[in-house]
Length: 62
Length: 390
Ligand SMILES: Cc1cc2nc3c(=O)[nH]c(=O)nc-3n(C[C@H](O)[C@H](O)[C@H](O)COP(=O)(O)OP(=O)(O)OC[C@H]3O[C@@H](n4cnc5c(N)ncnc54)[C@H](O)[C@@H]3O)c2cc1C
Ligand code: SF4
Ligand code: SF4
Image (cartoon, rainbow over the protein chains, first blue to last red):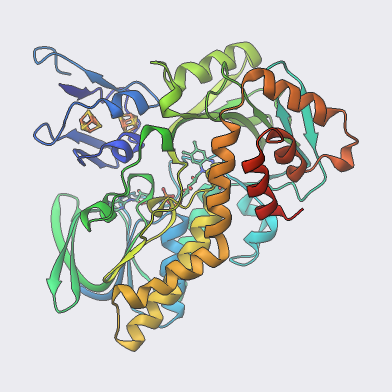
């Protein structure tokens, strides 16, 4: 599953723009992924300028 | 607090503030909603603009400008620098002040402004109206309006909620990162653009002066060419090599839409402007002025539609038509040029740089750069003639 490292994230919105199912909620200093909507496509992982999005196993969520 | 408006503008970047301003000037009652606490901060932008087009919107007051450029230097993978000094070379803005000024102008024209206000959804409210849900410090407020102008930047969720296909493919977004650095060796008179697979695959790396030893050094890289690396790792590699002693003052990430304009930018009672409509120049990544132009056109059309009591898609199409006439056609051609340029190998880029640097300075124009870069592609040459004439 996809998880975001809030320590690394700059809240820039690049991931939101490439998330086809609109699964990412972004506020000025908050970000959340709706795992119900997420299709694990990894577009956000690839596009994030800071590498803040990662594919993780269910156990080691941030 | 007032809960009903004629127009609600969502997003307070250059596109949104300009749309709000011109809608008010046209006589409409406008609410501008921005989730940030302050306009223009953080500045996810390299702040470069052409000077001439700015005058249409505001007086280029010195406080809005960091540096006036003497020219640009294009640097090929083998280090050949092509200096361009002929045309009006452009400005580096101080967007922190610039964006606030644009918001002030909207406010002076009569726009009601709500900061620290995140739009969480929009829905139809019947009777040709929209209901916009706004979350402010955890409390939810609702406002209604005849028209929504979606100016929510690269994310463009508002448009998506209204049924527009705004999500970008990895090919059509650049993953961007920029440091502001302090280093005496930053050239304070020239912008520098670096090209090539090693430094900036599918995009370019820039170094723009900000005055007093400060520079903005950043990359915008095609997201489908990153090969598992991040924009940050490309930028860090460059910095170690070129500015090993630089002091990093700040960092911003950001995505740059480099696609054609969306096929549809209006619907019943809704208009998309700026990055949200994918109106950034896909070749250069410049979106400030295009966003302002679109904002002005949309704001004017929206106000006039309200006056006539017709906010249908057909009525609002006028904005799309005006955008197409003024920028849209050229915008599309720039997309095709971008597609050509990002395919050039490092060898081709070097060859182009050698050819150009052999020319006398007065012949080195942007037009010449494009023609030389794409000289081996007849289809693209046609596009270039279309943009620049012969
Ligand atoms: C690294 C980088 C460098 C760049 N360099 C240049 C350059 O040198 N020259 C140039 O011309 N362009 C440049 N650009 C592009 C330029 O920054 C944008 O095109 C421009 O800011 C677009 O203006 P806009 O008003 O459409 O969107 P933005 O300026 O992005 O404004 C959108 C606003 O909407 C707000 N918002 C989003 N969602 C919501 C919501 N749900 N509720 C409330 N508010 C919301 C955001 O907080 C934001 O303030 C660069 C971009 C990047 C990332
Ligand atoms: S792209 Fe990366 S840095 Fe930007 S908001 Fe998404 S996770 Fe955060
Ligand atoms: S993996 Fe794909 S669907 Fe899931 S959040 Fe990232 S971009 Fe969206």
